[in-house]
Figure 1: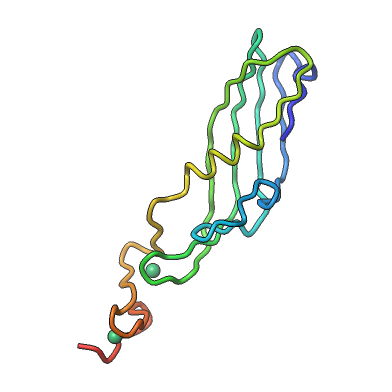
Figure 2 (figure 1 turned 90 degrees about the horizontal axis):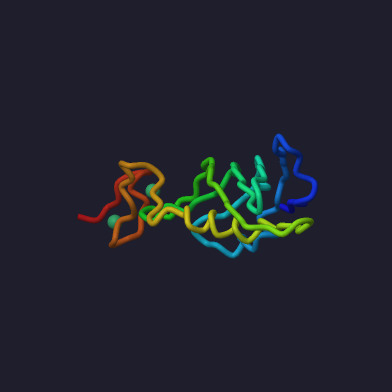
Length: 135
Ligand SMILES: [Zn+2]
Ligand SMILES: [Zn+2]
């Protein structure tokens, strides 16, 4: 997402863009896989030599459960602010910051549901689906 500093009006600027996850180099992740373009909405205000950007990200992601290894889909949503010092007529590129914010927000441990039973350590059966023969 690009912001043209000299095009920010007095009352601020609303921007909206869809970014393909591949463009942010986010497709090499294994635990979180973005399956839709990332919906980016930004509200930009310029005050003196600084811009303030309120960013809202929203997309769907496919996660892999750390316990049972099943894949499931969930909404990924994040809101954050960026403050940048700018020069007049500068073109500010926000993709790097957006990527950082997304990566920061990856959950440490992803579990499909709180009561996930995981896999049997012996035979590998998914215990959410059914009991195995092991005792
Ligand atoms: Zn699970
Ligand atoms: Zn088993």
